[in-house]
Structures are given as structure tokens and as C-alpha cells.
Length: 264
Length: 129
Image (cartoon, rainbow over all chains, first blue to last red; front, side, top):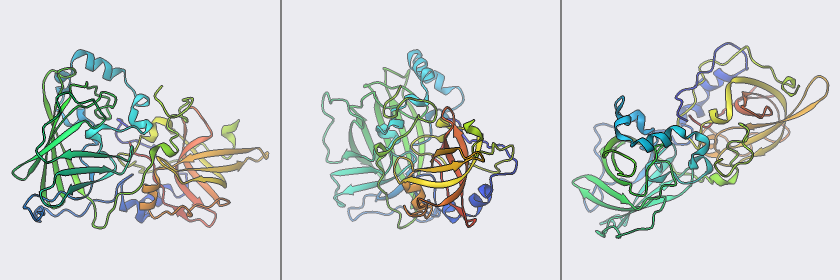
């Protein structure tokens, strides 16, 4: 997961492998779990709803899947993690990631490698915005847009309590009340229930969403820090699809784990 | 012994194989990219499921010893977007499957190529990095 590209040593053999990959139209049509991105339309502006707000609706891919260390400057991670956070991160391996056992990845990874959909409801003066995740936990995140405040002491959950507001054409989502059961990202960065996330979503053009995420957690980090992701609009006509991860998860069996279903 | 069955450990190889990003988990956690296998046999079961699809191939070696392989691929979504339906690979089909073997369990593998008896190559997709 965190190893970048796999290099398969060359030579010849395995009939049809490389030729099939090169020629197959399906291969060109999509990534592992998402529909293909729409063609870039840098000069086509972001659409608006009847109330003038930016229309975020659509099927998007990515926008939260890249591991955080890859988005930081060299050495920056070390200055951010508290010693105990660093220690825990270094002790973790993929086999312990709850995400691999079909549990939610939290608010950042809900927009990871699977397609997802933004829904503003109602479409004028939306009181709610939903993010529907196709993959993994096949779940949703809700953002309250009706002006309410965070509860004083929310019970920690996988997606926390999110309130949103518009700052010009940028959607700002503020989230607290997160549990510490998920990994913040695939690299295993640890956080605590004190995690506070502020996201700034800007549809910079018709096909592109910029997401700046600021993490603040005095229980895990020395200071707040910000990373930036990009989500791409999927091809017209793309839809999210059903994906029930718990159906037949055999993760770990081939590497010798006794049984799937829980971290060892 | 089992590794001999229908398996041509490739000193031959794979060119330009680049796995897609994302997915439920990386196939490299479960499978060893240096353990190339090729299995010829008959499909006995297809699990059209998530997070990943699996199909089982019964392969007989030259001594008549039968081994059942469990081949993994990516999600149904990924395959459907690549043009598959649940009927693309039927039980009873004769196939030659290339892939990478399990890190610990040698009768499991991730499929990287599927060629049917008539020489047709099927689209394959693996869980990402």
C-alpha cells in the first residue's frame, strides 16, 4: 500500500500478459476502483446552483487517498509528530489497518481510491451536504449546513460531527468528535479523539476540486499542519456502484494470517 | 511438490506491469511480486464478490495430481468497468492464468492474465498499491 509502484522484473513468458494490458480497452477506461476522469476542462467554470452556490454534485475520484507523508516537505513529518505518535506509526503495518477489514477510513479517506459523490440537499439553500462513498465501508458522511454549532461533547465516531459554511466559493467543513479507531491515512499516522479537521473545498474549474485539509490534534501533533489534495470529476454518466466489503474479505489469508475479519 | 503442479515459475516474465492506485488494500500485502506462476486448468468456482473477486482453477500435473488454485482479482466494480459481467468467466472454462503467488499460501495467487482456450485474453484488474 505504501510501496509505490511494483516493479515486475522483465523477461518473457506469461502469454498475453503485457499485450492484454496494453490493448484492453477496459484497462484504459478506469482505475482500480473508479470510473475514468473526465477530460480536463480548465476554461469551463464551476457550475452554480439556483441559489448561486457552487454546485459540487457529481461523481468524483480521489481527493484524499494519497498518504500524508507524500504531501509534506522532506523531513516535515518529523517536526509534526509527537514522539509517541511517531513511535506508534513506525510500529504499524498494513495488516493492522482497520480499513483492510472493511471498517471506515474516516473523513479523509472517504474520498480515497474509490469513486464518491457529493450531494447538496436540498439543491437550493442546502441544509445538508452528503458525501457518499462507493468503496470500502460503502458509507456516507453528512455535513450540516444549517448553521448549527458542534455539540459540546460529542461521542466520538468514525466520521465525527461536521458543520459546513461557504467562504465565498469555497466550502469550509469543520469536523470534531472523531474516534481514534481509524488510521488517518494509509501510512498509519495516529491521531486522538482531540482531532480537529478543517477542510476547504474549492471547485477550481469544472473538472477539478481542490481540498486543503488542516489537521490539529494536540494529543498527536506538535502543531496544526495542512495538506492539499485534488479530486477529479468522473466522466459524464459515471455512477457510484455497490461494494460490500465485508461480503468476502480474504485479506491476509495468502500471507498466512489465520482468518480474515480482524487485525492481528 | 505443490509448486510443481501446473506452475511454471517464470524465469520468463512480465513487462510493463503497473498496478493501478487505490483500492481496498494492496495485493502486494498478500502476494509476492517475485513469485510468478502460470496455471493451466479448469475454472471450478467463481466468487463474484467484494472487496475482491476470486475464481478457483483445478489444475492437474503430469502425474495426475490435482491442485485447486484460489485466484484473486480486484473488485466487481473494477471488472465491470473493464467490461466484465458475472458470466465472463464461466465455471468449466479452460484457462491459463498468470499471476503472483501467495506470500505464505502457495495455492493462492493474484491473477495478472487470463487466457481462455480459444486464445482470448480477458481484462484483468488487481487491487491497487
